[in-house]
Image (cartoon, rainbow, N blue to C red; front, side):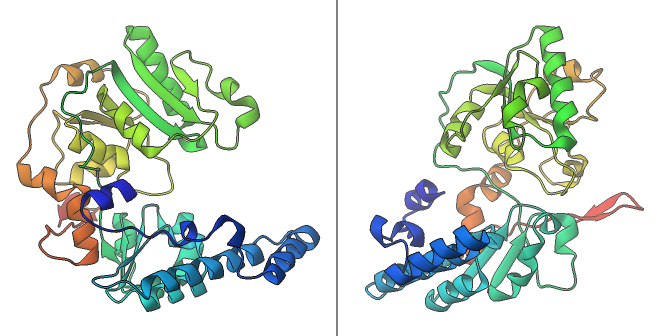
Length: 334
């Protein structure tokens, strides 16, 4: 994201990277107090609050000499204290924006943070209909600054994801299908919570286990080398993953278990197959269908550049909505 912002001409300030390595705490006393709380009471929050204080002091000092527009953009705001968010929002003269790329109920501490922002965006159709808060719609996006049109296709399928019980069997099922059909794949699992026994969970030879998190930029490069991207949704939200928009931006076919995707304007049966996780009878037919090119406006709309200007409310931009899904009538509106 930092690279994409700089590509668009923005100067990016990460408050925590403005701190000198030996000044992670606002004072030596604060460091001692944090260590004491952690050792005696297993309290890591005190240390986090002190580090946030030091980060804010560094940011405030830096912004004293900054002219022009200043925005605050928080993603996963539940990871920060309310005091830190309020402090940063108070010195960013063009507003503070929050975006939660996960279902709100998955990290419920986010609810206390929503009122602290000028605008708060969610990507789940069910969340945006929450009448208790003022929530604005936004999807995820694809990064449009690092697309290489000359990338050579190296495998049929690509998937990278963390282990989650709700999609564990689905991943195994598809890996077995690939093996049975003699197709090629790059399927990689980050063993979240199963580090000591990961290969027993995923014994298929087509599945690799990560021993460390890889940079997101590497993931985008690997995605571009595949014919088809795979998306196995977890059961805690209905919003569309980044994989969906990478498939869109890179002109890839997508196989997904997220049924909500049929309600979005970019859905086309040639490009996107909604899979039930078990039945493989229509997959080979789907693979033979030619990719259906969409209007250029669609590709532009879901790019990071347009997404950024939309959430910052910095014109010009194409507004990004979410479908309001009426389950009983199986209809949709935007």
